[in-house]
Length: 607
Image (cartoon, rainbow, N blue to C red):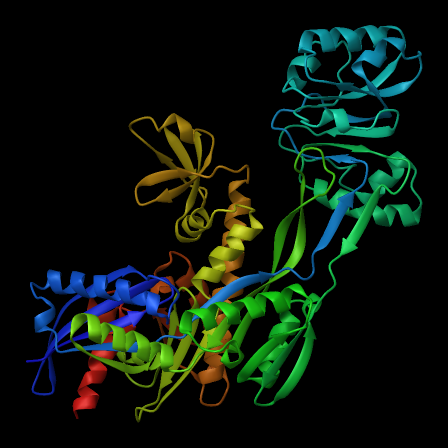
């Protein structure tokens, strides 16, 4: 009675299915296991992870390696996602003309416009002059308020203030006439003196309206039409802020420098097409579909996108010990996104959201790397290792173990790096496609759009729902419902947006609103999973028309996501398709489809 192990090497996880066969028939499924993939999928670095996953499965079954007759591997195709930030415009503020860091507690309300003067100069300012007072470090709130009150009593028209310390509310509470005050400006000594400036503070819960509007800036500073064009980056960077300061310097104000947009050349079986990355994701994907199936993708020399594509080739060449000239990119998924870019010259770490295009590139390598993995496993374990077949073909075999399924059937295997689709006809013919872009790319989009610089945090945001802690005894969930607790919540989560992760609360250490985080998360999933689901099914549909597919089963790690399956199901419902999560072997949910299919493929090899 041979015991067979099916091993599915994925971008994120490595899964094992262990089964006992007898006389050409499946006797029983023994167990399954799952661990995090070691290294990049389809490289020798996967071997340690495969060994651990096999040992775990054997241990669960009370077996050891000597009981194992054959290990069957999938043909793993690596996928690498990256950002090609070709459409970014770098905003350079010369002579420090903007402060828009949005402190949590600005003081006062309204808009003030006047010439900048230091606190020490205030006593010598003539009556009738409109000024913005700069309060440096070392001046406490009592002294600052007394100085401003005294100046205003002499007839100086103090329109607002900018403070180094976190004193805005304390200062405003002691003023005879309330002014807009922005505090926590760390580089206040760099704010130019004797220049026309504007300070704006909105009411709590609202955002500024004048300084985030190019025409508002034009009104305040009496700008020409040409000058108004130049302040657009400032206005964009201040959108959504509760407070801001803009100072007009004598020359230049703002210079915008565009990184030159690059072209990518998509080479396919139906021809070759050049597309400008600046045209956006839709234009890139239209070019890919026009010439597909894709043979290779190349970037214009000297541009960011070329650097990204060549880096992908170089990484894969090094990992697979193949010449870089033999590396071919067989698919790309392009997604429009936004990336927070630091505004050069800002005084408090200001960022502006700039357009970018995210690309997931799938590299086609030869069978050689997989054979290297098979050979190394054979040497280490002393067990026969076979490369059994393409992932999508194996996934459809596994999916057919879902109760209630039958041929004809299509599957969507949504993993960490790729989206695979396959369809099996009534007579058993299988057609499959392997496209780049899935869970990892979604995480990358969340990470970049929210400016987290923390891939693990972005992964948690992708996988789990959110809530806002409104008191020490209740939270408001992202769907608007309220959940109460018998015991008080940890103080460190109070008033924070938290991730509800496996019975725990993980506070998000950024000041993004819950609705903003949820919107970014859902849009990232739609742009990756829904887009790839539709294009992959169109590729495998016998007629090229998605509407001619009746049933689709969702498998793979991303199908377990709490909202991806619903998004894909909703999108496919428009085409009259019955779609739902798989339940492999009636017990595994959408997991383990490829590993189960690899075991079942052994029966065909014995036939």
